[in-house]
Length: 341
View (cartoon, rainbow, N blue to C red):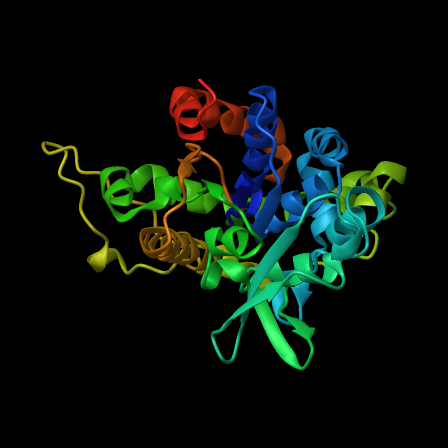
């Protein structure tokens, strides 16, 4: 019996996949086949290369400023971040070069931007496949591959259960990182979700403000060695560009009133980035629900990640623990489904 593991999209929340895999292995479950979408493809490539522990050690050491440097924040053609250093780290430290060299069968999924078709990777360069799978629209630039412009696989297939089956899995365990962004959850917790979306623009704002402080302090225009490492090769955000991080303008006469007697709380006005990332969360949750209904996995693991923002890659330790906890919650169900009681 071959067991497949489908790792879903979710940007920074994807570090929870590491905890899920660790917990499954501690239960004695051997994964034979791996598929991944977006951040799930990044973690999946490392796992299929036998280098998950190295990846875990690295991500747990990241600070918010190191994440900023790795992402290559700036107004690049097609996206707000380049991500070049992130994928260079994968290539150099956490993954074999080609699919054929991997320890386990592995597949990654991306989306053809112009045809809307799902693009599956099961051979060739692992890093190129992961780059395409992770190209979150608006954040990362689209990737040109074989005369097609590709973006994040989460647009069409956020949790690629079908890829595990295509590679021969008899039982598929799927990890959905979008469970907290279903419509019913959004309605129940609008303030939580609006605050979560705000974290993304705050990440870019905080990075820019720190850079400005470095160049202003004590009249010195040269940052120290640590700061220089962080800002080298960055394309700084201009004041005009920073406007996209500000909330939408709301005329005072049209500002929603907050009746104190009813304790109604109005969510904060979104910035362009908030609107974009919030829409991506909703899109991913809806597409995931539809795909999982049409091709349900045998076991579904859903970490509770409402508190984590899309760019909070520096919260890896917490995310990994949430991933582990999500497995422990349904441990008995997993054992029953796999017949390992």
